[in-house]
Image (cartoon, rainbow, N blue to C red):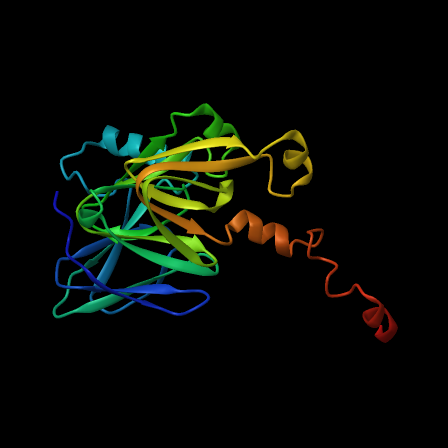
Length: 254
């Protein structure tokens, strides 16, 4: 089905949210728990499918829901529909500090591959499905894992990147990235995992043993602070845990 045409506005700085304006009978789908607020006239319903195929039977919806569980997402998707009059707004917040990325799927080939926890919301008509990484190495050693998400459609979708967003346009080029920093990429980009270098560089370089390698022609979205790196940085036993209390002056004033 053709995606609903929705208007939007992204607000905030460190922890952003996207405010979506719906006309009567327009619907936006979102991850469970992502809603920030909704105005009167908008009603939500939790469904097993994404609504992109209205004729899909129960078994098809069950299979789609099961595939979402495999990617680490919720079994259900929440549908927000405007049942009133005039224009009404519903907002969805980012799960942690970072950047919300608007994607016009119709302008980037109708399909984009994203990491499993990147999807935030999209216009009704957007199809969400699994994308198996064909390269075994990318599954075993890549920060995105063996299973990614595929977003298909001709409307607007929104994904989330941790920290600062980096958008690159590759034209037959190669880009090597920390494995957890890949948010998504369009078709035409080949994603694989390669060794970081020699044995000494892999063990003592501090960049990990493997790097994500992106080759081809298309768009690539990267994040400066993926959630796993953020958790390690602020963990009680993490590498930054002693920075505030260390040092001679701190010890003198304690």
